[in-house]
Image 1 (cartoon, rainbow, N blue to C red):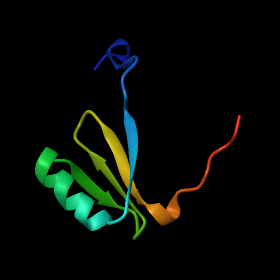
Image 2 (cartoon, one colour; image 1 turned 135 degrees about the horizontal axis):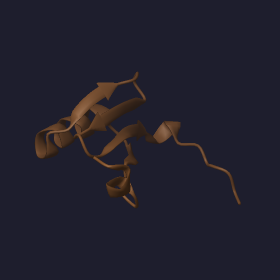
Image 3 (cartoon, rainbow, N blue to C red; image 1 turned 90 degrees about the horizontal axis):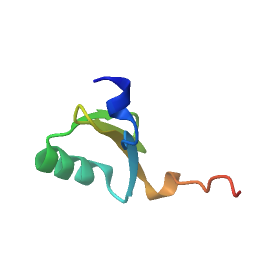
Length: 66
């Protein structure tokens, strides 16, 4: 895909979930996403266009405050 067609496109998103295995099962079945586990607190997904991940509620940390 040419770089110009990627402009203004969402390319990574993260979801905070209470139960990663349950969320993984749902999104794999509903959208056909391919999953990659990175330990008990993070799981990444991809569908060839959109990439992102799931994290558990306990791993969310506040970001910078501008």
